[in-house]
Length: 205
Length: 192
Image (cartoon, rainbow over all chains, first blue to last red; front, side, top):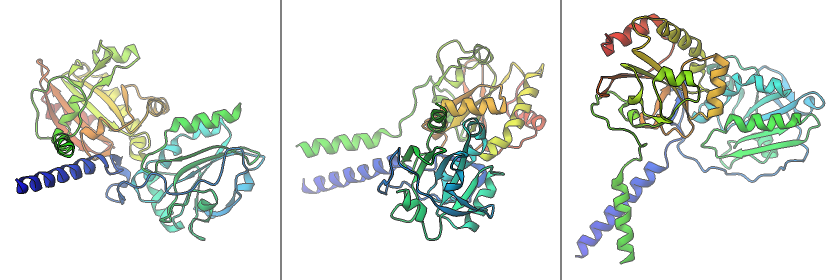
């Protein structure tokens, strides 16, 4: 009887592990053929692993970072001219990230409609970002490297994770430099385009 | 006693297997990947021309309800650079098919946006002026029935008069020459 109980409990434990394995799936359900065999799937990650620092209504922290285009881009340079959407992504060459910016690339009409500049920021270095974004086609927006000091801007925005990557986060800043929309989402999920468009259109009001 | 009961529940749950969408009966399947997509329930298009194109009258349908000998399903993603690049090509293919006296009533196309919301699918449709019906799959419920895949992905389904379905094509890759693709589909599906 004792042996039966042990076997039963073992099977139960095995089943529980099976269910959990099936439930906590890879982040990579479907991915673009543009990155065939090139992506590293980190598996399911802790949805959020940082402490928020900023709130809507506060001034957006200033920064200057090097972009893929060779320029140095400062947050302050947009004041009085453009609204800005900052898209932080965790890391290059990973599944969800690889499908996020290409979507924003074709969504330019929404940005034009709302007089909003888009800045993509990653903690990867410039060479990595260069190689990765080449698969996305020609990007209309600036891609900035927050590599060194590592993640300093991500940290200033409260979205640096403990492993040195950034959260999947969006910050919308108006022409006065004020934060108007913050979305720090589950790192395993891509934010819907609609929430971004709604936030940008709200600035027109 | 309680721990034993909980253990039984966990054991039975593990045996239940992966959840699938509600669907109609499936009578014939091949070994090609994608057969489970036949179980997926889709919301019928709001556009009446598209409902007429598919021959759908109800508010929900499964692929085997489509009035056609062949249904080509394109799994796409608004965020996928290859799908973006392939959109004009797919439009050409649809135009070729729709203008064909031999095949326009026998081969139908639908697109399913893996991980895309209705907003994202509608934006993609408007941006590329896509005429064939597109459906959102925001939680990957439909694309997960096929498994891990690269977009764009194509599944070709042959339906006979009794709604018996078989998969004759299941592969990734866009950039297909429309005329060659049509000939391939006609040949593989045995369209007459």
